[in-house]
Image (tube, rainbow, N blue to C red; front, side):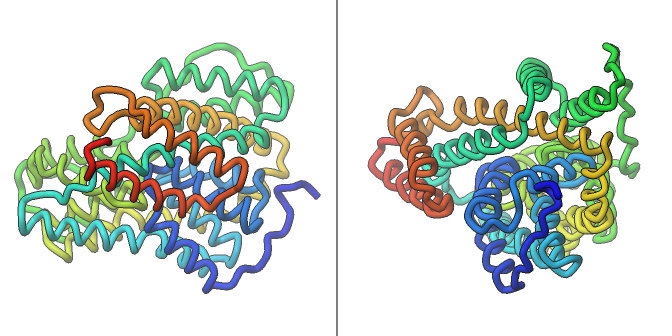
Length: 391
């Protein structure tokens, strides 16, 4: 029996609820940070899954549309308690973040401004960098088992670093190359033709949005959105701002800012968009529409993951995708270091931020301190640094 097929423990619903509610309200830093924090809780601390099994779940989310980190949480729930577990973990991860985002959206619409939380986020950023560095190193030790995988990792990292190629294409390419290698078929150099996504919605420009329009639009977005949730912003700009005229460009920027200042899935930006366009019903239906496909797709595909690992070709494909995942984590880490270890105004490197990141990394590696407490401490230090003008 391989490590991946090791039977996970049967976890109580109450424990799933507590963990994923807490992950939702502390999950700052974007999808890879969410995955990293969840790995620390689920694999390292609770040992519900092996690291290889967890990596397979992460890789599987790159094969289906939808927000990757949210789908990882739904996958974990499915492994623990089947379909009810998938629904519980998904809802618990989405709902608190959505409600917090909704509260800020209401405040924004009523006052026309966004609450300033920059200092808190400034303090959290170095901790997130340390978490991603720790988990990336840990996952690399599991995923990069031989020289071929190391080569794939290096090539994938160079492609991601030097070109605008979407992460999901690099991951899938790494998986295909390694699968061909493992079954003895040489991967010939060539160009893969990529089929563009179809046009999602055709509507009259500046037509007023109905609740059905909002739900249907975001349902289709959730059904075709591959890779990072940040791709969502491109769709909204092209369709809702330039095409339909439901939002102004400034309203979109404000909606993205609110989504960025709250924890949880990046796609809760949709909650703000829905509220601006059609109030509370619009916020709820837009959020339901964008996340519903994730639940359906994970529940349909989750039973196939063990079979994929048992297949020589598909098992090698998942292993290759894992190398691409590690490359994406590494490149993301470099981007975050450049952005997250600077002064609050971004003008220069911050000694305090660098010290925060190194201190958090030592506490994670040496003492295995809970990442949630480090995130909370980073936020508090950020607020104090902002108040005293040292951020």
